[in-house]
Image (tube, rainbow, N blue to C red; front, top):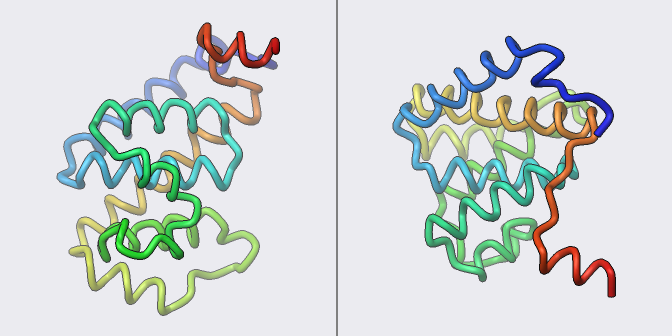
Length: 156
């Protein structure tokens, strides 16, 4: 790890956890939020967050088939609801906004059809939050702690 950001600036962790606490109580489905977290973490290549969110989804009872298909959700016909698809498209568009400089109107229209105004603002904050966590972990080199099976597989 390059830098322990929580030790270097504890207020950052406190602020980010405050956003997390808000999101946990905002009314959006926790499964939906974790699917968004997983997809954004895939895009950003954040190994720490990938491990964390995949584990959380498994613990919440998410199927292996859906977890395996998150990265290819557009082609996973019948695995994700229209609401989940809209949220995943929104999350991708916001995460990749620097490359396109805008979110396409059709993605906004699709997500606005599935979410109330408040839910859409909360979903947007969820996307912003996971992007922040990803950038903290990736930037400062925080990766997952390998379990025994992972250590054995890596050594083989």
